[in-house]
Image 1 (cartoon, helix red, strand yellow):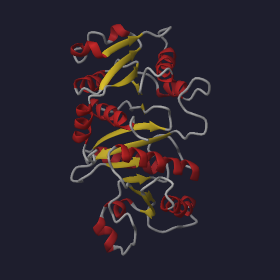
Image 2 (cartoon, one colour; image 1 turned 90 degrees about the vertical axis):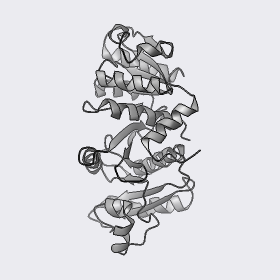
Image 3 (cartoon, one colour; image 1 turned 180 degrees about the vertical axis):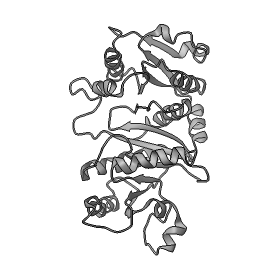
Image 4 (cartoon, one colour; image 1 turned 30 degrees about the horizontal axis):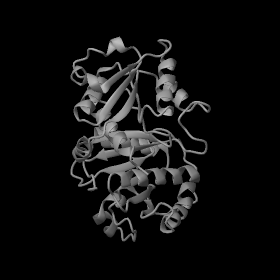
Length: 306
């Protein structure tokens, strides 16, 4: 497949593929979710299972043209927890490929996702968040992790973040992803213990643990994505200032980057939870219909990740 470098190409790839991913939308009553789902239906890559009160969405203008690609799942009760459990059950039973949060508390949905007996996180898997941004003026998409889930990743969790990001890059047609391990400078320091483990991740990548991939760090954000800055500083890195993925040291850095790139650069951003048996879309209350739509498309591409 061709390397997908823009959100427009991502959507075109899905529309041309002719495969509708089954999306379990939990309590999708809010306008931004309905608009996002309507666009995904119109794009030809979604079959939607609304889990919750069907009467609240059945006649929405964005949905009525696509009735043959919509199902309504009525939970056992009108409690949000019942809807969350029903949506998770659809995935476990092989009836849904993607789980999406609507007008329901994140805590309630995650409780169902993380349920040890009936949830979606296999034993030993790491739950983390992966985002992708289309930054104005940049010629390709920029993946980054983790801005939403893990406060301070352990070395094992960071290795999982690297692996998930590389697999997603491959689903986008990128044969040799370049992964930058981020710090505020390019120097290993005992004051920042996470930098002490970066060399080991680079070694594992060189040994082929994640297939063809380049992993290096510590690097700051600019030297990761700006070849001129890298050369000016005299830094020798196989990333060459052309990173595809930024792995942040903690949630504080990742979340700050997420909000900065969104609000100060006007970037479109999409995100999914990784580590679960299917992609989980967990938008925040402030996400627009476009954000949610692109997250649906991101998750749909992610379904093909190895």
